[in-house]
Structure formats: structure tokens, C-alpha cells
Length: 257
Image 1 (cartoon, rainbow, N blue to C red):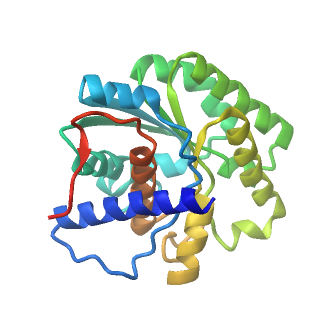
Image 2: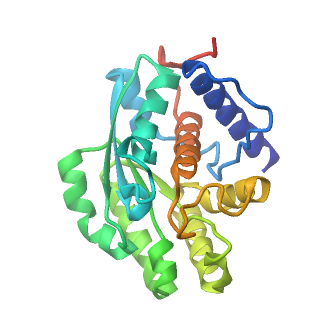
């Protein structure tokens, strides 16, 4: 586990340095960089192949309000918009199209029901599925939730599409309900079984809030993320993608200037 975390911290550190350099911003040593649960043995093979052969790739971001960008001050501040910019900044010589199709309030089954249509329309190399928050808040049965995830992940694998899951956000209010953590654990269990990468947003936000305060990355409703939350999520997802890419030949991470 220590080697996994060390490799991921290095990826996030490189990303942060490169992005700060591109924005001509100083990098503070106090900037909290959080680990991901992505295993070094889980690679984004299709995405890597697309970048190696075409130097461009398409990503479908599907989910609920966090994917829709509820709480962001403008469309450019959402994690979906930031992700495309972050990837193209750090992976020089590439072009990404990140398609965001988030439906506020949607549970996992809703996304699963529209997954085939969304995939057929977008033809992505990678699907990023932000999932679980509304299921936890509505107390959707855990077994049904897990089965929904499994069936959808199996179908995506059959289509030869790479997948990353993003688990629920953290807030002190949300975790007062023990069921909320049960859903977070269920996502981790299914991901391990299906060998799918998880961006551990829950623990990342918990870590940030311990350092910066309970509402550092949340809107005033204590549920939806704010601009800072989306910025950190986009960097976290981008670093996970970069770390999980198979070698892509001349496409390299940009060094800070």
C-alpha cells in the first residue's frame, strides 16, 4: 500500500507543479495532495492505445449533480471542464474531449439505464462514473446497488471501454448517517471485485477538510462541491488517469518550467 500511495503522490505532485507553472502560479508546500485507490496493476489500456495511436481521446463523464457541476460558480469551474484542460496541459501533444452528462439527483440505476445510449452516442475510450451519493441519501438497498454496479461494469468491460469510478463526497453532515459509509464501502468492494479504478473522493475531501475546515470545498448547502472542491477533484481524477496510463510513446507529462 505504501508503494501505491507513493506512486500516486508523485503523479499528483507532477500534475500540480505543471498546472501551477502553466498558470504562472507559485506552488505552496502546504497544498494538500491526496492519494487515490488506483492500483498500479490496473491500467487504462484503451485510453492509452488511443493516445499512442491517435494522440486524442474521448472521455464520457456520467453521474449526478457533481458531474452536472451543481455548486460551481460557472460552467468553466466544474470538474468536467477543468479535467479536459488539466489533461491537455500535462500530457503534451494530446487532445481530449471530455463529455459531461450529469443528471442532478440521479441514483446508480438511472445512470445504468441510460449508459448504453450514452456510450453509443459518445463512443468514449474511458467512462468516468461518479456514483453513490444519492443512493446513500435515499437508502437504496445495498445488494441492489452493488448488483447494478456489477452489471454495468461488466457490460462496459464487454465493450472494451476503460472505467473509473468516483465515490461520494464527504461532509460531516452526510456521514452522520452510518448508511452513507456503507455505500462508500460497497463501491470499493465492487471495484475490487471487478478490477476497476476508484478515485477516492470521500477520503480526499475528508483529508482536505481536516486541514482547511469543514466547508473548504463545499457549498453552503453542505452537500454540493464549490469551485475549490471541483478544482481538487479534477486534479485528483487527472492524476489518476496519468498514473494509470500504459506507456504512450511520445506523449509525455509536461515538466514544470
